[in-house]
Image (cartoon, rainbow, N blue to C red; front, side, top):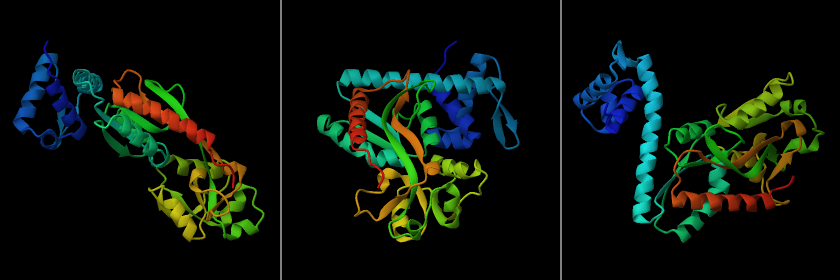
Length: 306
């Protein structure tokens, strides 16, 4: 049985979109070409891969199995092409990096600039997304590595710790909260907040910190998907927030200050994750080395409580 990787790619596009026309637009082919591709696969496997539902189509059980296995096969073949090309050309190639906002702010800039100094022909693609979306892209082979939250023992991935990030309650230094005796989570509920979107991990953590102690969730006046925006808004309002301690700044000149509440202190580990069985180009390997070095530097200069 002969299988064309091109047919698997077309099949995946149709399966993901649930529509032949939209899949044809994505892969820049005609609808008849994609229909013939599916027929070839169904003849090869001897079973239907789709069945019609209204105006759309859905995978059969055999189609679901092929989507899972075929995606993996495509990833391996793409890695193979990149590895052979890099070997033949003797260059570092193209590196696809996924990162969260914190990684983009702290880990990537210096490491990427050093990489370009040492390998000026390397090209970089940087995708900034939420952690869950990045992990899906990495597992699908759409990214070479992810700079974000990592944990040990994740199946199918190698993870290298870079630094520990501490997320704390923050207000501007002139906030009235610093004239009160605040020690517990309950003491924070009389104030209004600006918080990340409910889809982000730090927001889910702080909401759960209140709910798990039988308290209502904070009263949110502003919420944003942009974590970088929060420190600027905190500095200009009387709202509390929950951000990385690294965003506070150093010394008495900082306009922000930590509200010290032990129950509202979240610790998370940041580092580099990449597929255990995936291909890392020479450039990607160099970048991992530089990111580790940058993580060591950040650990040695970690901000303390201000």
